[in-house]
Image (cartoon, rainbow, N blue to C red):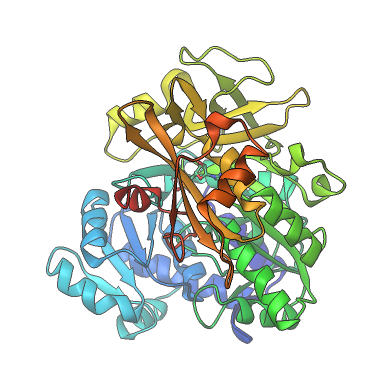
Amino acid sequence: MNLFHLLDGSARRFADREAVFHGTELFATYAELHRRALALANALGSMYEPGSRIAIVSENRPEYVELMFGVWGAGMVAVPLNANLHAKEVAQIAEDAQAAVVFASPKHALPLAGQLRAQRPVVAIGETAYQQCLDAAPAMPVEVRPEQLAWLFYTSGTTGRPRGAMLSHRNLLAMAVAHLADIEQIDEHASQIHAAPMSHGSGMYIPAYIARGARHVIPASGAFEPDEFLALCNVHASCGAFLPPTMVQRLRQEVERSGLRPRHLRCIVYGGGPMYVDELKKSINTFGHVLAQIYGQGEAPMTITGMRSSDHVDAGENVLGSVGWPRTGVEVRVVDGQDRDLPAGEIGEIVCRGDVVMAGYWNNPAATADTLRGGWLHTGDMGSFDERGCLTLRDRSKDVVISGGSNIYPREVEEVLLRHPGVAEVCVVGAPDPEWGEIVVAFIALSGGASVTQEELDAHCLANIARFKRPKRYLFIDELPKNSTGKVLKRELRKQI
Ligand code: AMP
């Protein structure tokens, strides 16, 4: 069962329909996409063994889709890497993955070739060597077993050295099926706008959209530009996109600033980081009920729990602040330190099991055994169920602040501070303290033109949360540091304390 069969099916059924757009320009129909992917599969197969790792380092480009399917068609393993990594970091991961070759966009190819030297070849996507691969005769896709690897997913790295989660064909198929079952209604008239990186969040939705014969739209900028995104939503039909919460916020602000409305916006799938209730309400107000949520991690490709857009309608704050319900085919539990189930209302570690859960970490049996102990993926996230099985995420266990023996969940303090009208962004972390063990420190970015004092924020917290949870220090900064997927880099902030 090779994921490639999704493309086989759609190419047969929807041969002349548009499959990939570069901005507003048609890049490939389904028949063309199929032919190009099979040619790439043939070219790869003539150079490397099945099971070889093929690294991809590129901003979002239309070739991304054919390359992924070309790699799968050849029975090889895609290793898409964050294009914002330093060439040295790419070299380190390529070495860890023992990648046979690195496909890089022209702007990354040269620095990478310099860094990798003779160790592994670099092919510039879209240029001569790549075009020669496309001239190969189409090959038959290689047979693979469902448990064979399809994607080595290097986690986005907000917490240290990246690790490669091994995702199989079965994992990605289970993810695609769960997406279609739980989150989005997609048919051949739908378009997916790839604004978030295709190496991570957005690329994970390629199989589901291919399965339905839908369109992939890659912005000409290769990234998320709010005004470009809005314009694309007025050109393409029935638009959906995965956007991390920070991009949802920027999009909303752009709509408010410009007055432009995305006419064909059907669905924004948000997740990958906390969506604060205040921002969610504002976004629903601006876009209507088109927002759906996913909670997951690289180790269970963005498929642990979720919330349909309809779950947001007339929902209370407790549901809006949650991550929704377990996804189809995924068992989710909240457990204590000995992996015993905790009752509704009690906070523990979130663990899950199902066809979406990775086989383990590449070349790292110790981390695999620890993370998958007892056959359950230990997410490192803390959360609690309510009586209806709705999961609320607190924070990653290592981000919980323990002050004077009490657990303080940064997200709860952040939600309160964000309700202050002068606060644009906030991130709460713990800092070592000789008296309390740890104290709560809040990094605050103020809204343009606002002037808010520490005393005002303190009074605001005292009016809303327990005294012991309020920050003991406030540090004002212009903007929170984030990685390319929009996640706040807590470790960068901790260095500033
Ligand atoms: P990564 O594997 O790097 O994409 O990071 C996954 C982590 O992001 C999860 O373990 C959570 O801590 C966080 N995360 C993912 N989805 C959500 C969500 N919907 N709400 C809050 N945090 C999330």
